[in-house]
Amino acid sequence: MGGEIERTLAESDMVLTRLGVDIFGPVPIAPMTLETEVARGGKRVQFIDVSLSVEDRVIVRAHGVGLRRGDHDVPFGEPDPVSYLSPADAPPVNFFKNPGAFASDAMEVRMASGDFDQAGPGVGWFRMRVPVTPGTEPTPVETACAAADFGNGVSNWDPQFSWMFINPDLTIHFTRPPVGDWILLDSMTHAHDTGTGLSQSALVDEGGLFGRAAQSLLVEPFGGRG
Image (cartoon, rainbow, N blue to C red; front, side, top):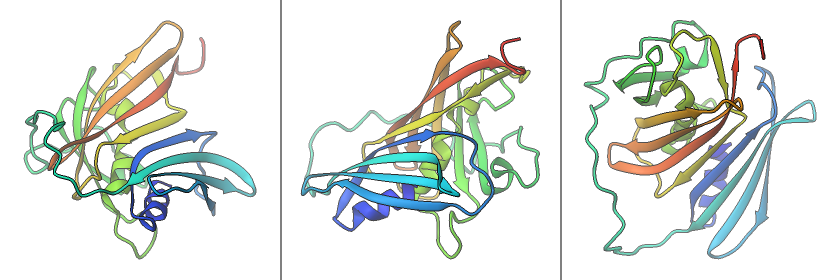
């Protein structure tokens, strides 16, 4: 869906600056229909809506915002650089062991700090092993969208895996288009007694910070309210 919004905006030379995704239920391994609508066209700003359906039932809805591409020598606003282990120096993730699962087979994950089985904030590099659709190469935006959904796992506070941190949504803000095959998440999660929480991630490529992502979280012990 992120790739579809990116391609639609590119037809008008627009840059994707925000992607919001609402997940209505589990996404099955089954034929799905993708529908795209330019909700509002414009010379400076465009809004794109995308839905993903199975048998006429919408299971995911996304909304993208694009801004007109410029060519300016902006003399301000660059964030201070932060040093991370490179993908080549970061060790492989120590958690995914399920053959055939998306996290195991579709993504290569290398941890610059922490791990999925360690409590607390974490930093990980992500690269897609396979194309999103046959005959294509994953774009940096598609890789960033896939990686951003791992924020609540990178910053997991429960290494015993007795709690669920389910995200019904994902929002990504892009300062600029990402570049390269590898996307880094620098993630932190906060949870509250109300059973709600928030995962926040800085998004970094090998050129530096390019955006931020957030996930609302439903926080419950496995098995429900107990």
